Image (cartoon, rainbow over all chains, first blue to last red; front, side, top):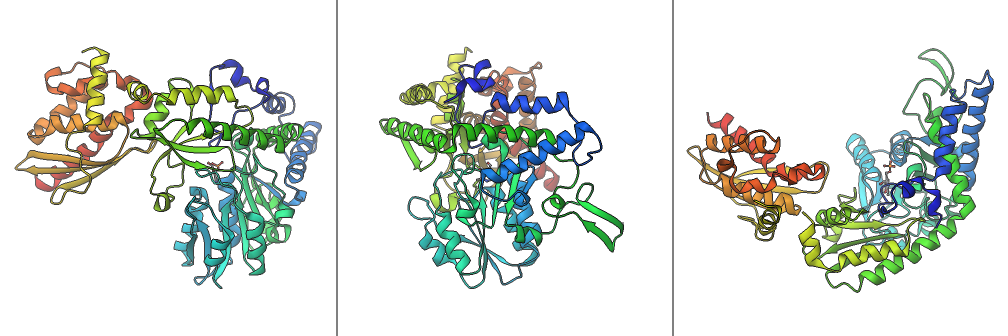
Length: 398
Length: 144
Ligand SMILES: Cc1ncc(COP(=O)(O)O)c(C=O)c1O
């Protein structure tokens, strides 16, 4: 879909980009909107005594509004960060660290990305609470049953990706949240791989915190979002102090902070990035996120069906999203990636930042193809054809 | 040596790596070597007596280039004194840096003189050397 909107596909017509789980290609409208800021009104934000600075404020706050609409939140529940990683750290250290004590338990899973594991590990080593893992079922999925079984009276928070970056399964977040809330447990959702692909309605799902990254949804790098319910954000402590987040101060005893969400955005924000992010939100809305998702799943099913014809390809995961992980029998995943790269096909080899997943799957490393709206069946045909001849792969991988 | 022969030697060392083992070797010095930017991860097991490298084995998961590089390095180092080993590695580094080098000393490892020019494969070629250098240095500080 819409391939003509992506300058990189014009300057690089043979590029087959299947690494959308890592980051995505950028449409011209996003690049233009960013450029416009730099060329036409590159002032700072929140300094609004003159025309172009007011324009910056309006554009910046306008994107906050669009972001809120995109996930059905309120405007003051949207904090701009540098990415999912910063958002998850702010949630863990700004909110939970101050509330957990040594008896409390945090529930995550072995399939989480490092950014949804290491902050919690750190909190465990700082305050002595315990990080526990929800067991995955035979296909590496999280079921409501297993969530229920893992909850104890000490569980205070569950933090899960809505879609994982290795397996690609969509977790039953709504059901998990409903059950968790009945036990007074808060739920953090890592939306890095889900918000770009499926409709995410924070009110309907009733999630307490959500983190996602602009660059995984065709936006600029260095921009992320933290959504939190307003009353929870009120109780969160900023981790960064400085300009832009305070109302006034005279002495250590007398510091008054700005309201939520501004108090969490110390310093000059990534203005150009946030403004560019606004362009991709408009872009996605104009195409329709449901259409994007439908297209991806159709491509994914097509890829799986074709890969199944090849006996030396082992499909590791076939999920409900645009993520396919596989191995070529007897060939190290990185060598497969190097071979495909010779034909301008970008895939990722490795453990995909989910280093503890191997505890469960026994498969250490895989090749991952992750699809997005601009991918096509023709690209998949080329990709699959290149995998048919194992001797060719071996000959050409070095 | 033409590139086809080089490729064959690399593939042969990848398919039948010399002294690759599945489990830890007791009594040997163990040294891990891995790359930050990729997923190669090997353990080297080294047996040194009276300053002579008696044996080296390795285990782990790594790409074709890293595996072949480890296999060839091990063949080239067994039987050498530590001094000769360090000298071999200096010559090998000289080759990689496109300086003058002694091709008799580098031996079979010459197959990597071109691979090294592909930026994304450099770290693969030098993976085992990083580990062995660390291990030899440690041995020397402990024993001399
Ligand atoms: C599931 C998941 N969570 C978190 C992240 C971290 O995102 P970022 O690097 O943009 O902070 C990623 C990125 O790979 C991811 O896939």
